[in-house]
Length: 320
Image 1 (spheres, rainbow, N blue to C red):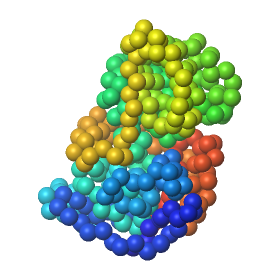
Image 2 (cartoon, rainbow, N blue to C red; image 1 turned 90 degrees about the horizontal axis):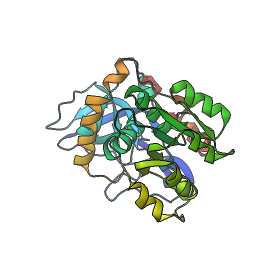
Image 3 (cartoon, one colour; image 1 turned 30 degrees about the vertical axis):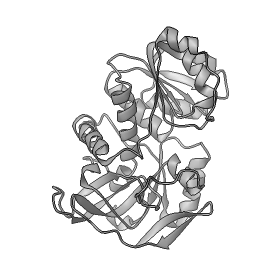
């Protein structure tokens, strides 16, 4: 099979051995794969896959099941999307059948490739780890990203007002159209976020240079969920604020979680999130699609930090 590898900072569409399909697994003929910031880091040699995971790029994909291992309830021909520790940017992928969900009603295969990683990330970090309660206020840094786009929609669906920090006025309007109450452009005065706070939960892919601000913005018993380090890995913090506000700082990753954890997470998504697509309360936010031959341009697009929503690579357009 052909698959996308990161080679010396570039991407290459190369021949790879076809994986075997074992008990409980399914083989998916891949239609499309979502592009995530983790793929940029892996391409640059900064984020290797967990031990035992595929070296092929891609943490999520959509497609059609072509083989079913013993013990799985999926059927050949099912249209699905999947969460992966790696391997999604390939002609086919083998994955634990418990990490697969059906393509939601009214969603295309290409759109479905943009769903698993972002909705799993938001559900895990905002609704499970941070235990968001109805009516609590949320701040989403990088609110126009794929994760931010999903988080805004979920907050709206579950009755939680949310605000964002973003890179431009255009992206702020995009977030407000999705359901955000408002926010600020990061080139301006980020401290003005205090006008909207205090916030019960902050979802933070930035870290470093936003850390001190986050402490100021959090409410009593606030939860700060750190999921990335786009703004650096070091920060000076006034720990007295952590004590006085009883702040919880939660560091979280998804890719390295074990199979059972991801299976339980996907069971929750199936029950609480996936039905919202059929109801029209959630919609894929597809910014741009690229053919697999234009993968380098797709990576450059995501790296530009100007994307509102998700970038998807189309691998087999005959399936879409």
